[in-house]
Length: 114
Length: 113
Image (cartoon, rainbow over all chains, first blue to last red; front, side, top):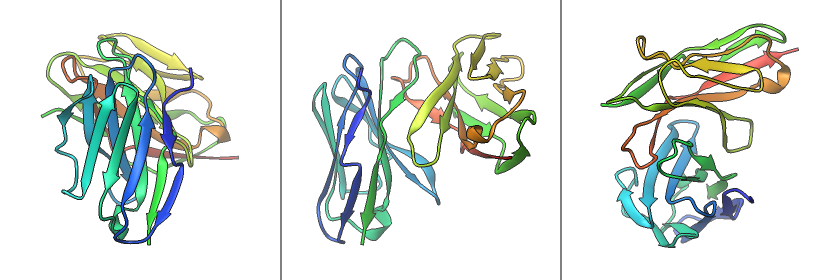
């Protein structure tokens, strides 16, 4: 199994630009999670989906952030417009619900907003 | 509400020393418990897990026992290596949480030669 795939691995952009992060979960997993990790705030859960439906987006910092999961094998996290304080590593994780198997994390996308 | 508390880092120790990272949790019901490890520049990896009371999870020389009476899941390793330097996260997953994990803050471990 290829594991959770995220792209791009690194993204450098200028303030005000739109940023789209992509995630492909492990096949057969029906829960998907987006996290943000910074030195100041640690690891934060932004949003998660179950069977492609958003369950809890209370961690999304503000309206500039949006996430979609159009099908079971793909999800996006979009920031528009981006700001320097959005600089962080963004992780996607997937989980096979019901098995207490924990979550499987992707390698992350390191975002730098100048 | 549900939460996880783990000891603050950084924890610095010499190679071959004994490592303990304390973790306690509060939760409704009987959650599954996990330890994840994050090596520098990488994502989180599942290290070990326990799904019911008195279960012992083990992997790569690390162990943790699910103690319901003390609501704890302390991580231990008898002889650490430099390659164990990483950040360790204690987490729990409630039975009806859609797979959502409750995270501890993470404990950085630094092992020196």
